[in-house]
Image (cartoon, rainbow, N blue to C red):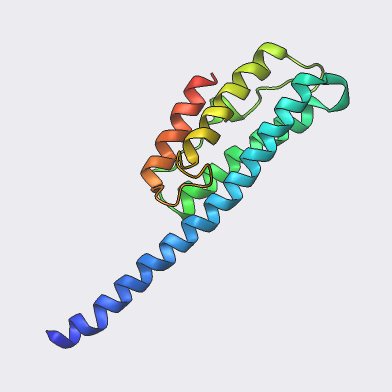
Length: 142
């Protein structure tokens, strides 16, 4: 029995460390894309002629794809939010009211995903917390 524990416990610890590292790498990609999208939304709101609305739509769809990938590879508590991220922005014209809703949802997500103490990525963020923040942000922006 001691031999089984001697072999199993380190393996389980290593697996947990690898899962945490995988989640952190996933979060870094999500954070970067979320931040870039938020910045683009703010830019197009202030000067609609300088940026294509299509870029915003593509970035939102990329965020949803990252969520879908997280559901399949990280944890099924990560859910995509197609109602929030897919097909929101028309390629033909800037829709200020729709952009404001999107900006509200993205701002909520950015704010809650960062630590209140440091303003940086929250190192204590769990998969469950991440999923709840994204779901709430998506509902705010709908």
